[in-house]
Amino acid sequence: MGWSETVNGALLKLAEPQFDVLLTTDKNLSFQQNLPRFQIGVVVLRARSARLRHLRELVPRLLAILPEVKPGQVHTLSWRDLP
Image 1 (cartoon, rainbow, N blue to C red):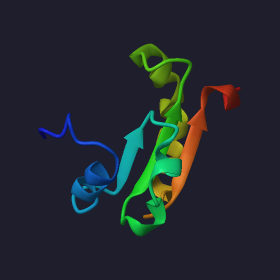
Image 2: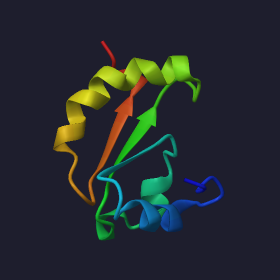
Image 3: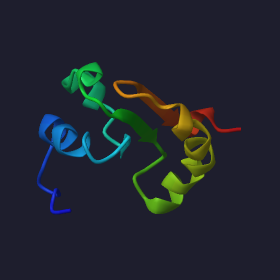
Image 4: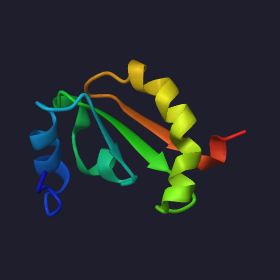
């Protein structure tokens, strides 16, 4: 989409009219932005690393919570909470 250089609030503003949920590995996003003012939900993925093999471990839980994510909400999925 050409948004690779877009960060934080500008990224959320671009994404909110087109997407229901933003997935990120940026654990500080909720501290840097006032997320309830955006009409998009956010899911923070806290894997052991940003490598795809580690992010994949979170996919089953991500798929389970996606229907529940509401605009302005932040959900964090952590590898530490995996069974």
